[in-house]
Length: 416
Ligand SMILES: O=C(O)CCC(=O)C(=O)O
Ligand SMILES: [Fe+2]
Image (tube, rainbow, N blue to C red):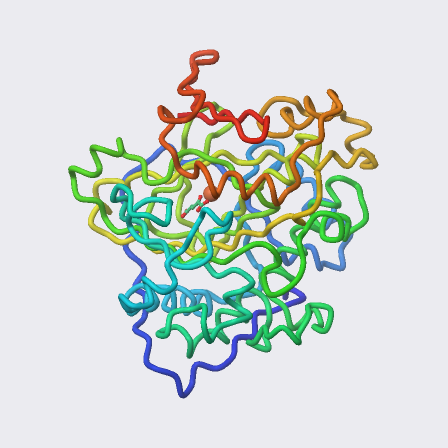
């Protein structure tokens, strides 16, 4: 039994919420990504050998993919599906007035609020069929004004899931006032995941939690997302060339993607190709963010991933996706944790991505962006731009095509 078990507030006395019916998984045999599975409950085992094996397996998973399935993280399938019920309820019932009132403005550097099916800016752009509601700290702390009317009766359950089992996150309450048993995704699941990763780096258990994770409110500087991908009409599918979200890496520490039956998430695998992630009921697909790639000296890979059209047998289905994005502390200028005995022994890994770029800047004596600057420049300017429209266009390296961009002097190359 994991040390913190999700303890949701009761749903009694609240409006009736129809159950989310998980769509049928695809019957197609695909070239699935082979991901390692980490059983988080083993971290609490009394058997040091079992824990040691878990750390080794995590190390392998980090070096191979930067993606893994997390299981036994303290929630039942029924409790998890209740969160999907609520996300579906939000999207079915949000009023037009609330869509307008809570419309997001990514130009502010955050995705907080409601995303219409019309691209990644506040102004209407091309139809993409993706609707979202994003809960940041301010949404949790000011429920009266910042969340859709329809979801208000259930905010205690959503707050409990993202972190605080007291079901409220008013500004009087700080995380320090909560016991470990009163926290869930942020303070328990993510914290224990970071503990596991700290152990891989052979650093103290709370090294990453204390030195890199953002704190405060229910989700720190991160956010929780209710996303709904509506099926695309054939002409839009053609126009978008089969892609719903272009290849990218997430900026933060860990991203927790709750595995869903609709096949669409792909990762760029160690075989240098896109491979779909198979549905694993109840599992979290953990995706390592850029902050962890930098602090680990490139050992933990920020996973390149994208969301595509579904296989033919799912193309008329809606895809509901729940995601918790855990963020790094905003004022930090990240550098590798050179005090890690593992990094001292094994050196840096300079194969890919943001760490290599940061290292070039550090070596040249140029300050790297703060974490806040780094995520906000991307959110506010060029989120989800098709590869051919990026500032560096498409570049081919060793037979692989990449979309090239640059933010604050840092080059970003992502496979097309
Ligand atoms: O919905 C998903 O599976 C992934 C979404 C994603 O990659 C993102 O929002 O950053
Ligand atoms: Fe992502």
